[in-house]
Length: 68
Image (cartoon, rainbow, N blue to C red; front, side, top):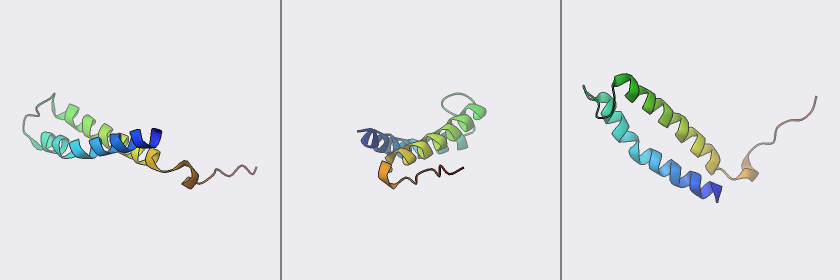
């Protein structure tokens, strides 16, 4: 269930990515100022990476090495 939620989240983040990029390129962003638009775009890339990581099945993630 978590993977499906992450996949839907990833899809929505990718869907809205062009809007945030276009908003950043405007002289006067729709929501907030330029620094706010930059922060929103950085946060969106971080959330995209997190959602992409959560969409992978747990069995394909490499186990951590527990040797001393």
